[in-house]
Image (cartoon, rainbow, N blue to C red; front, side, top):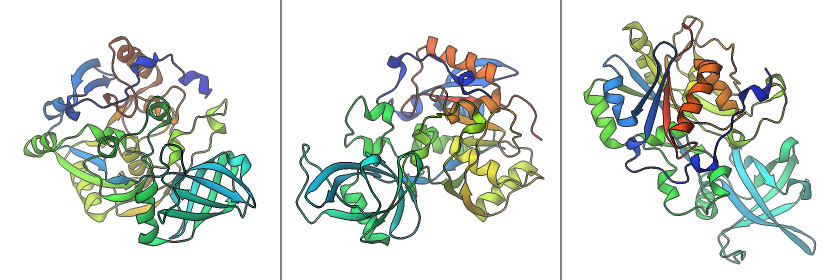
Length: 363
């Protein structure tokens, strides 16, 4: 399909720069091919879901993956920013670098925590070597330390990797360290938040559990590739970056039982959906699973795992808008997004959410 088919006009004042408080007060647009569009709030989930349903949440934890430093080569030095996006081994990360064109294999980069645009001369610096250069500004960084030592240094000097459409409009603050992390976060490794999970509060979870709704965690370490624009003119020309995901034996058992009892599997976020659809068997059952995922979902995809999808409002021409269009239908999603724009819904990571029902029966 032509990428231009997934374009739409979005006023910039619809982009949310901060989340609402409390988080479950965010608006929730129900998008149902059978029943049309309905305006609700996230806390209304207790009235929408049933005791047979399960919410599948992503328990990844965002790390401060944006590193800033200096490339030193002989007598010259330039500022470098690296966005870590996928760990290769204890000492090695894939990263997107700026300016990548000025880096060469073998260059040494010294990362630290800048203060007022001044590079620190202290013990809190981290050295890395550019091991390889890939396409699209991607590099391979091998750090001078590894394992938990490297993790600790990244935590000290790294910055929370807010999406470009927020970071370009304001500075990252201390509040973002809390706001850009879901209450489900347990396993460190993501460089972007699974944003649908940001809407949940302890109060809402307690109400849902008392209502009989189960909560089943999966893990997908979201990579920085989620921020990359689709530059191809046709969807067939776009390549997804792979991300690591896994499903535990316990979660697989919960999902199989819910399906057996006639309940619905509600994916909280597109990240959870991609793990579920990548791992589900032909008979629509699950087992413990782990592996890399580069699943690119566009209209025509046959969904086998997910019955309902909760997600935020996404960028024009993005892979995520393509995914939701595959789930509920492109025409209906265009109508839903125009409805949201006209009624001043808040878009993107810190914005409102929608609850999507499928366009057609699952296979």
